[in-house]
Amino acid sequence: MAMRSNDRILVLEKIDKEKKDNSIIDPKVLEGKNPLHAYMDQGMWYFKFEHGLVPGPLRDRYTSFRIAKDAAEAYFLSRNIRIADVIDDA
Image (cartoon, helix red, strand yellow):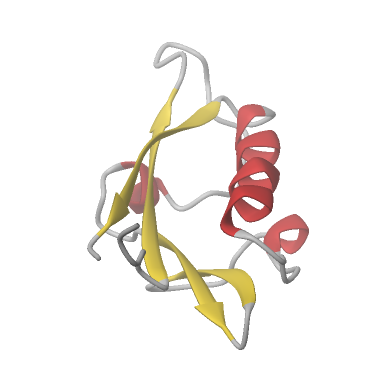
């Protein structure tokens, strides 16, 4: 089994591009100019943007990448955003 990276990028995109965005997400996030990283440190996963703060509901620490990704999916789906891809450079 290959070793996976401790730094993974979640690629986000709008689900319905016609629907008005009422979230406080930086538009650069959806353009790929401010990616959302999932980092693992000391066995716990957390989220970090390259610039700016992560929304409150995603500031927790998670015991696995799957749990962290599920939390991010739930949060972003409520804002008309989906996780289109996960970049794992391991």
